[in-house]
Image (cartoon, rainbow, N blue to C red; front, top):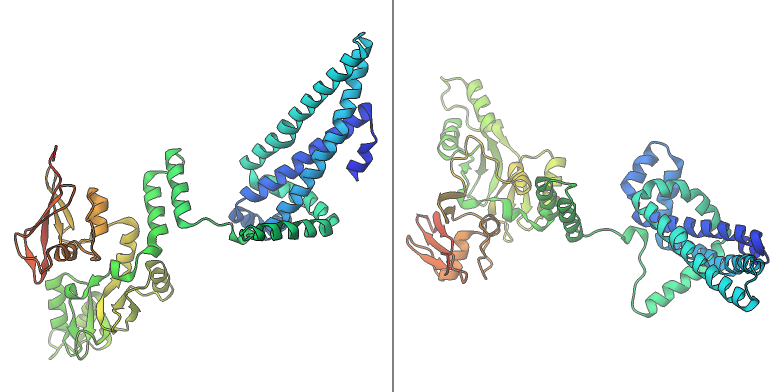
Length: 445
């Protein structure tokens, strides 16, 4: 081995071997950091382009901990060899130089050892550690691709030793209650990714709008179908024996483009009718048709999902099934509401207004005063205005006020938060609040 061959070298040859060991130390440091920082996605792209080095790098990432053990073995051997070879060789050269300058022997020996030690430590830190580490952090994929081949040769040559050392280190880790992880376990949680996005925005490498969108994507799995649905009480529903004229009249009156069709009652939804299908059927039936043909083939099948289905999974299901809307059912199997693809997308990008959206959920009516719809979600209101609605399990603003009051709301009901926000029911729709006036705390209160 290099270390064994260099052990007996002195003078300039020892310094030469020291340089070799210094480069070897930097090599193992660079490999270790590059494998840790390399992005799997970029390596996979390189592999798809036919770069064989990328395949080896991906294989190394799959056994990352084992390769860390190999890199640490290489760093340790190189560092020990550097101290055993380069320092005495350099000290010997310096001692001869100082002796030629008529420096007393004792002084020359002590001075040469001290200078040699300082130089070797400096070179080891800067050339053997810091420089390759910074290079690998700056260009991890390029460094990994360049060095993974020679590193694989080193691993193959010393595999038995590495296996034993890796097993001992894992056993020691478990002894102190730490479970070793594999390369596949070294992934970021959504919370960690959100922190990364925030830091990227502060550094100016990603815009605020992109951060907001990506953060919404990360939070999509935290939302459930119940959060995004149009509740059953707001649905425009048709009996299965309705005619096209009745369906078109209901669509025009409600402004809804998708109408669930029920059989026995509203909990027995048998399908869904889309306005465009009604118009096509209406044209085909002709203006003189006796009964306008009924709904017939305009009724589409509708998929039912539990109210607890997370939106991340629901979005994938809707895209894979090419479904524009799904029925949301509660724990008893009854109709809870309807979720459209637009509803899920709005969870990502915010409200999408169309020609049927006449009212916004939150309107500015005066400085520090807003008018919010009772069906507006609490978390959206809190996010938009910065207030906090304490306690309660209700999802909507109206539901929260009902919980605080302990009864159904009536016009004029008022609730105040500990911070001084005042909420007043201005209108009532059925058994819930229609419009709620929200007033910010006054200055000094």
